[in-house]
Image (cartoon, rainbow, N blue to C red; front, side, top):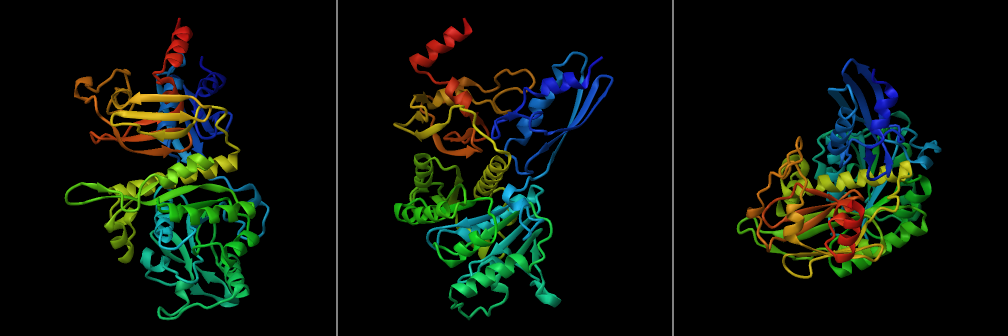
Length: 462
């Protein structure tokens, strides 16, 4: 007869790649039941926006099916967002688990648009989310979110936040006339931040996204002083001047002992809707290169798209108005990676010494070069990597046999772009239009075609 101990032992083979531990050790396995030849259990993740949710579910199912006597497995996926440790110890906002400021060094990089869309993605995935706009000089969140009903002010100066698309919203924009300008010194700004945190009935939230004003001024300082922050996300466009200014925001948060959860590259390349030609108006890849060079997580790149601006102006952000667009999908990936970084911080996750890229380049068409953090260099052909794709389109999940026809993959195929998946994998967007494959760093390193790695693999398998 199969025991719970046998099932748990099998599930220890399933590892969360971001947290670097197995799902049993992490306490993810709940409600385990064995009835004859059927096993049922729940996997409780640290965020509903987990980028590898489906992968963990399938791995867990296959691990249990490998146990003698088990023929059926039912896996339910749920999530319980863990709070930041320092946030658990404060009396201010005790029901808000994670507070994440979204910052930029300069204005005009799309920080508010990014904040709004990230909040909406997290809600769509099942999280409880608030959006606080403390950009008192240019509050734009009410317009971007299309707020129809303003906040309610109750007795005792308590405020019920506005709500739109499931996101609780507070902004200075609700309290000033559109033609007025806020001309305040530091003490007034500090008091406003304090009131928006302490006087607003936020209720229970998994994430409070805070849209900051650009720069490194009084609002940023007040926020860091008043409340423990989970960590900041920094938005920049790819060009050097924006990165140089964004670096000042990074330095500021480091001085204020606020972790940097990652960098976001906005307005990353433009693809014409009519001819399909790609043009790097503001450049592309600069933020990724900076993040690799300074070992800061890269959360993803969002393309420059006129529809993102049009949707924001009309009060219906892109992930709501056009959820299948490349921009909406990019916002989704960034939100997943951001949630993964929050979980890593809160759960003490680690890469455990596993291989990780330091730099990814294309020395020529049809070639991909990865310089690893341990100094090793791997140069792959695009064709080799494309043929090695393990997604369900290319490989039969049941038999493990390749479904992809090698003859249809051109020798000069190349990745048009790459996107990070958490801190463990890369997604390639290939020139043949394929983009569903996720390549784990361990897998990429194992594919290294150099003589040293090939020799080591031969020794290992002999």
